[in-house]
Image (cartoon, rainbow, N blue to C red; front, side, top):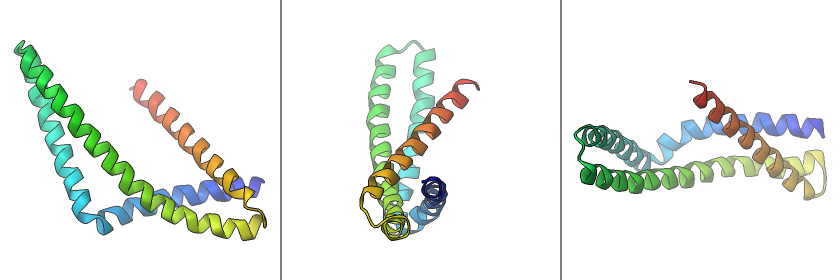
Length: 133
């Protein structure tokens, strides 16, 4: 079991790195759209801050609404692109792990559980490291 945990974590980390390299190349148009939208979001954030400083509550609320829509668009586009590449890479490992570690497909659930625990720990770490800055 420990071999499965260690190998799964190694594969997950490698799949993340490979996905970071593949996405800008394979999904070039979508990746460029995300970068453009992130730039627009940064500009809107600056304008929103200026509206808040100027005490223009109507402009501030309007910009916040637009920023929320744009952020959701960016977020879900990233999720769709990165998860498809990541799980495409991970599925090859899952098929291989079924034959290496066990002849049972129950191992698929164990691998997915390890992946979920990994990302939960990573998210908690990111949250607290951001909080402490």
